Amino acid sequence: MNNQNKITPGFNREGFSLNKSGNLEFDRCELIKLAQKYGTPCYIFSENIIRKKCRQYVNAFSERNVTFEMLYAGKAFLVKAMSNILKEEGFSLDVSSGGELYTALSAGFPPEKIFFHGNNKSKEEIEFALKEKVGTMMVDSEYELDLINQIAESLNTKVGIILRVTPGIDTHTHKHIQTGQVDSKFGISINRVPDFIKKVLSKEHISYNGLHFHLGSQIFDLSPYVLAIKEMVKLIRKIKDLEETDTLNLNLGGGLGVKYLESDLPPSIENFVNLIVDNLTKEIRKNNLIMPKILIEPGRSIVAEAGITLYTIGNIKEIPGVRKYLIVDGGMTDNPRPILYEAKYEAVLVNKINSSLPKEVVTIAGKCCESGDILIKDLKLPSASPGDLLAIFTTGAYHYSMSSNYNRLPRPAVILVNQGKDDVIVKRETYADIIRNDIIPGYFK
Ligand code: LLP
Image 1 (cartoon, protein in one colour):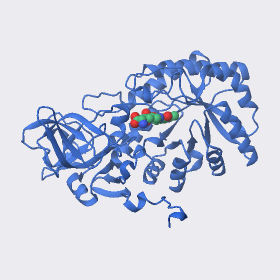
Image 2 (image 1 turned 90 degrees about the vertical axis):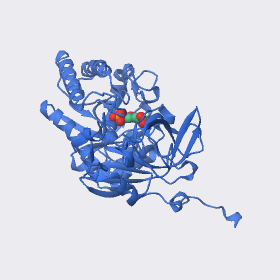
Image 3 (image 1 turned 90 degrees about the horizontal axis):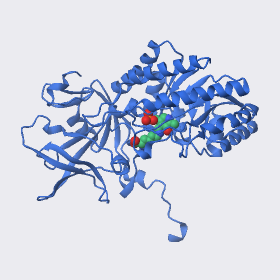
Image 4 (image 1 turned 30 degrees about the horizontal axis):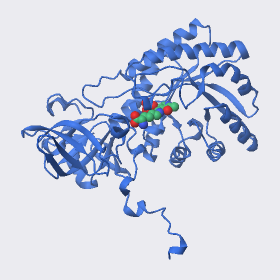
């Protein structure tokens, strides 16, 4: 997978290579062949890249000689095969709904390694989790603490909890994906925790296992983590002073950014891990506390760059002097990120990867009935024709998991590739799937 530079000048994307016939491969699978075999649009995931990212995190922590636990944030992309990969890599799992929990359990993921997040878990979700012996409930509010305790009592069980704290720190990312700031719908405000902790410790069916914070997502500037660690360690000290209780686990959430554009230069996984370990060790020592186990729960930085989406170009609409639209067979249904966050992407024409055709600036539009359904604005590509195959990079995180059936479009297939091997891990939806839950009331018959 190393002859990337031969592909085209400036092409620097992990997992890509050219085969002997000059065709573009991803994890050694020829993309044109995958498109022929599975149809488009489809998501392609490189198993090697997913595993490599998992190991980068584990190795970076292992080198630092600290106690740690790696979780993966299921919201980024969770299907049964993904759950198996995580299990094999020794990861634990953050789920944020009954549906994610069900997916993991159906694939045989060990419940004791699951952490259940969410800012409004329903009674049914909590019951489901406790009956299935989920290891840790992440408590998002005072209301939820009571609810979990009540349900645990009714089931005659005791459950470990971690408190999600909002540390009041802003990050420099899109406002929709910031979460650690004061004005947030998530978590318990950091200044509330000292009063609240007495109640936590008094609950008979709950054991206090630690604290959590999550600052936001697609973060490039890591300085907010330094501030948050400082604040969280102060809180740990306060809890110790007030209640004589040690905080044994500190979960620092996810958030590390990834490369969508060639020009994006996110910090490396190693830098991220080292910054966390350095700062936490320093603050813990300064405050004369015992070092907690470090937990983190990245999603995007594990799967984003492991995924690409293949589309076929159909209609080409040129408005002379204004814009040329290449319209693909998917759109905001399989990638809502441009319309939600103005997210930017890059792409190549797979079948014209080394073409000498003149390049032109085009706009990649989706097929949904929304003018805003634009995947990429102003992209330079060799002159395109209907039938050309387009690959958009970095579509592994928050794409399939946020896909929809708008316009009653079936969701694409998801294919896992690994060194020349390809397997379907999610079948393409059919029209029958689309109407599966529709019911015509009897009086129409
Ligand atoms: N932990 C918690 C509590 C979270 O809320 C999240 C993401 C993560 C971990 C994982 O963060 P990551 O490592 O993936 O940045 N749909 C948006 C992203 C929403 C992130 C939600 N929370 C997007 O497509 O950019």
